[in-house]
Image (cartoon, rainbow over all chains, first blue to last red; front, side, top):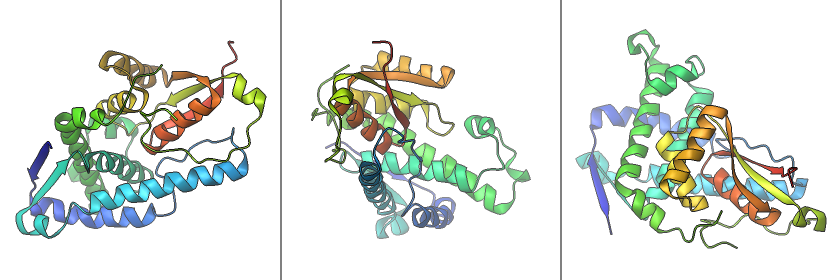
Length: 159
Length: 99
């Protein structure tokens, strides 16, 4: 099984975990990406959203579980084909929520390019933006190193 | 159910025969958060696209705001929309009025 271990800087990452934990509480009962489901009847829509939420919460727990005793002792987190997929999805959920709830003052263009004067941001926004970048880096790492493992679990092509 | 789906969509929908027989489109809309590499990976994973096809649709989403990524029977279209939404892409189901 392919496994990637990453050593993170504890003083940089540990403060971001408070933001991630807050986000996970916010996302317990709401979808990170609200979806238009006009074409579904009401009962089916409820079941649909319920299952999306359940999956979202499982993914968030997978990401939070990275930051366990080993992380606080060694600063190391590990990705493999069993946790890569939920963690990549969780990063997206957290990033969507950060943009929606913490980074409204920044333009989408600025978020996309990262061209932001960090010194000009207040502490809460700066921390949220650091978290946004950190989660994107985790995603890129997993996609770069474990893309084939993630894709490998899928089956046939159909289009 | 297609085997490339990661999870099953909710069951027990009361659909009409007309809905099942007509063609439906799965449309992915642009969002300012998801990384291009992420969208390409999701298209490969969920829809079974190869790299170049996944990139083509990702760029279409990015530049034109939307891309029709699949067309076919409603049940399969719903399954694709559900799975794309599990990956937090904004995906919608539309009747294919060109047929």
